[in-house]
Length: 492
Image 1 (cartoon, one colour):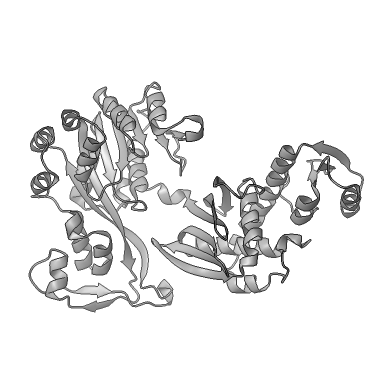
Image 2 (image 1 turned 90 degrees about the horizontal axis):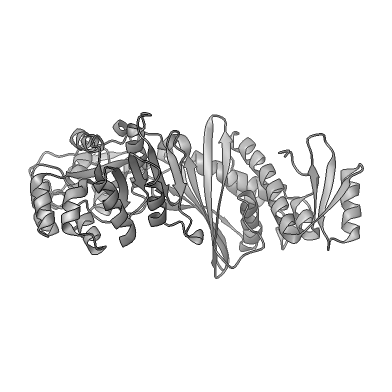
């Protein structure tokens, strides 16, 4: 299908139920609903300017053809715009027609330019998410940059339906359905960069909220050595990956980089000698040489069902996106007992808290003690901007909060400058703690020891998350406020 701008505007096509579909030879077919007025067909034929064929479609087929045609044209425009110079979003917004409903306009270009400008600015700003949020008197567009949300644009709320509809067209969602959540995705090629955008819509009081997750494929192809782990943590993690079986768990809250760590681990194992299979929700990045399966609860494809199925595919290594229910936990344990290396995530505050979490799911302690290989906890903190960070001498109380003793430390705090857009931070870095299983820990898990007792043994010679964070503060890489924001002493 051609990616050129369609002959008929989206507003006209949507309102009157008629689209002009070109083929490779340049001939045009007018596809329309049976209810399309004759006057609309005559007008469409006049705009095209040469003879056309006609095709009558059912309402469902028409909606699908409409979304496919205009989505491809929109994506072509977005790719071209995003390669250009940065655009002023406020200027783009000011250039929108002052109509009560932008979809009533025969010219769709302003709203398309605005969306393309938003995408371009988000990618330029290294945003991970774009939030489009309608409120009673305004439409807010916010970017999540380095884990923090900031407002990029405030628009009149009357633009919400047009903006939302256009995003839904680009991601091939049902634009007529506004009362249920929907999920979709679309892709952009920006020169050598391949960008995926995962779209989620959610009905709210003042209209549909839209969140677009920006997934740059090359960003996730990280080697284990590029994660920024302490050498001791990296060595212990690599040793656990070298084992032929067992369970390796990566823990932490949403947005702490667990998926990136798992993908780096899979890349280390992906040498062509192993059959590596994953079940994920959703599959965020395509990994060449690895079989990836998408969870789909609507058809009964849960984590447990997917894991059970891939175990019949002769795997050597299995990655489960998350262990979130007793059935998945039980199958993962059984998989490791039968000679598979299992990688997964659990949402807990610390590495050893995952033991209690699996116990709560009904996994017997004797099974945990014989299958767990390593537990990793991680967080992401913002990196101080090297162009404007300012040094100071920390107080004794601040040192105590980080678990540091002694004197002579120099800490740095954010200031803000043009290089970091006035935030004081630029980029992020990871904090890690790892608990490799030894015979003492296995015995403690088997006997039902408390998390505190296990932590006293595990971290007698290893650094906790907080200690790793304190090290980065002392090295001038981040601020103490950042470390304490994501890692309090009472959590470790």
